[in-house]
Image (tube, rainbow, N blue to C red; front, top):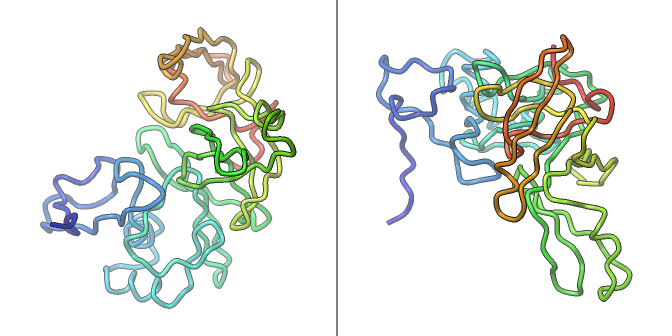
Length: 249
């Protein structure tokens, strides 16, 4: 049997801004670039988050009409999952938003200038060698970018990119604009855990070896000078001295 297309409201992720008891069912995200526990279906985004529709029927009409873009691509699937750092735009009404980690809400939007609508920060989850000795970077939002190497026997290009580094890319072309290495002194945003949404400078990393690396403790300092800790797997570097893109309203 195939995967169920239905989801009870009471079982939906806690951060979805929906009424839990008024109706029984809610739209379930399609399989896609983000897992269900880190995303919201496009219909919920248009109706419940952005407030451009009162009913599911109205939201579907807006989506089916081809007016909604996600990361520069028209999306007509009302179940399409929208997740961290995705840009949702309706150019017809000059609406450009980025969905970011947000305190207490986990995932919410911030309005961005039109000039940033085709830019996105993505985190490198891992990298593999593909046919021809080239390097494939697998990213947090499900994307894959292949780095062409000149000499497969000595792929110097591969050493430039490390797991949990970030990339500033152009969408939908996926052209790499800037590589942001994970290091002390860089600016990062927390994408999960109790400190989700907080932005700060990395001041210390107690990095563990091997498979335990992602559980390493990281200390950050926010703009007010307050220090807090989380784990490496819960942060995404977003700039050298300040975020490269708009992350707060």
